Image (cartoon, rainbow, N blue to C red; front, side):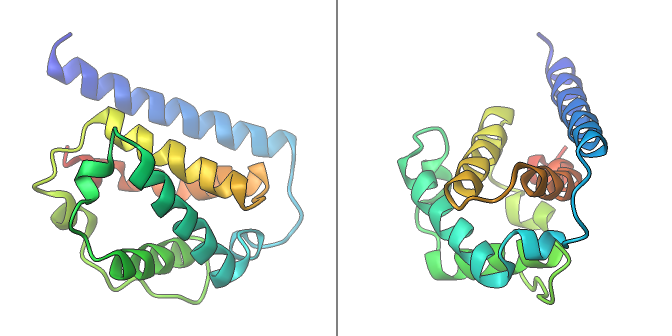
Length: 149
């Protein structure tokens, strides 16, 4: 399959997933609790990120991309980013996604592996499915910058 078709297919899958997730929310409206609150506020988000780090280490599909990173800084930056994206009082001060991932040549498989691990980490922390979907929807716009498309 030509490379451009793979990009189109991946983008189409992400758009389909976003539409599906949005549709699921319309069928099952959530209470007025904010996404930030549903994620357990900063402490809950930090717990999810910590569990995500353990899953990354164990995942042969992506762990090589994270070798040599400053784990404490990664934890802090990702916690701040998810906190901000979920409507919390945090401010992400890390590098821009395109700049950060420019030399990593991240594949669709690696991107999806990290997304799968994030979902597993949220499930392990009893984050409601609706809140998981809402967070993933907030992360979808970052896809082109992470993949550097």
